[in-house]
Image 1 (cartoon, each protein chain N blue to C red):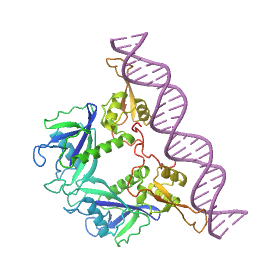
Image 2: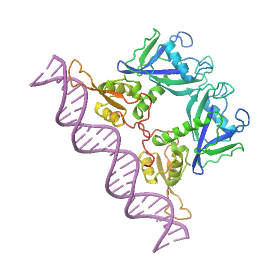
Image 3: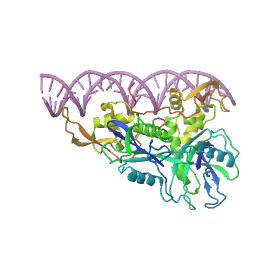
Length: 216
Length: 216
DNA sequence: ACAAAAGTGTTTCCTCTACACCCATGT
DNA sequence: ACATGGGTGTAGAGGAAACACTTTTGT
């Protein structure tokens, strides 16, 4: 059981890593991982572990990625590892222990075991779902301006995107709604921005069939 | 470890079920399932089990679905079950043992354990991927006419679709190619149909980003 | 007044759909 | 000849991207 917790930190998509205290791979960075009790479901094991070990309690979205079964994943014994993707909103600041840190996914240290594969898979899943679901809600604060959202989603995707079309796509699909409030401009002026929120804060597929749609 | 093997049989999307010989759920239909040896990878365990128990050796595509961890899945003990989706081309006719049969997914018998959830998940995954990948290759014979393909994909999706647009979408995306050959018309005449094949016989994403594409 | 940031109008492109029409075969 | 099934031409709807232009603020 293993968690890839992603969040945008300082404008970069980052993953939560934990420095191993024991062998194997002592001193190397690894994903938060642990065993599952016979009375626990996988999801409970993940949330309990994150709350206890790294003090992360505000995971806005948690979904299963895959189960890896390579024989020599762990040099000690054969371990089946089920990976989860967790997302933390950018405004949440968990109190991280000293042996835990956020690392930008495009500038990772050497990781223990085969953990970089899990990180790649998690980032791929997030990027794909940004396009056809409302998963952005789990990266963003409850309320935000379009430029804040543009920066968040741009960081997650790994490339810049325009605020104009982002607004139009997300409003046309009713993924985000204006709250009615407006934000105060920054020091350098500029027109005050409309404050938006996500219409739903649970995963919803917003673009279910690209083609081969059912007849109407 | 558990396999949802799907195929189009007699024009209907069907799942391979196996009649349990022992308790629990003796006599009920269940998905092919079994344990995993410590020296086996999950994928190997699935393929070996399918070959040995139900004599299905020609699975054109096999992918992992999810791992279920409900405590009381199995009334005997706590079992983690990793499900796989397998697809068999419509022209392959495995020699099924007497206790094994294809059942249309829209007309299932009562199933053992929570197996109907796995079947639902598998069908959902297949239907979604038909829209944005070339996964149809795993349902179709190596060569086929457009109307054969239309019937296959229509059966998998659960609704009728038009041959015209199917052709255009799949050729525009270079998912299928004409072989150059033409088929003989049936008894009732009609223009001979062009014979097509899938350009690739491995899973490829053909429509990666619906929106929020990277700049060019 | 000017710079900066947000938002709108408009055009263009592209994909998918719909439907009429044409083509090649069997009886 | 005509029924049957396959293929093509063409027009239209809709979503998304690009970009110029307008609005609203701070200094």
